[in-house]
Length: 105
Image (cartoon, rainbow, N blue to C red; front, side, top):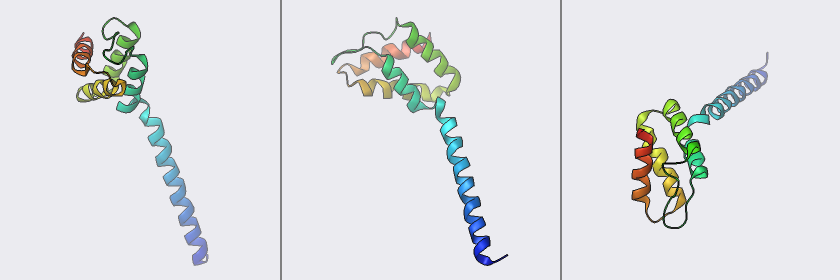
């Protein structure tokens, strides 16, 4: 076998390994902080000042229960902070406190 053939085979093998790594990353990101923050952001109802449905929305509570199962405990607050930051409301501290309280129940 010629050297160029060996190099071509090595390049093809590296491409296949890289493709497998990338596809594994895509399937594993289903339960990451960013995706949960985006889902939570989609469920929140808010105006420019305050978030309204922090404790009484069933879909919101269901998402938090799912998040508790999938993520480690130290990442729960990251998800909540990221989602509240995406809303750009003025009363962020109050919303964070209410969502954390809802998460503890």
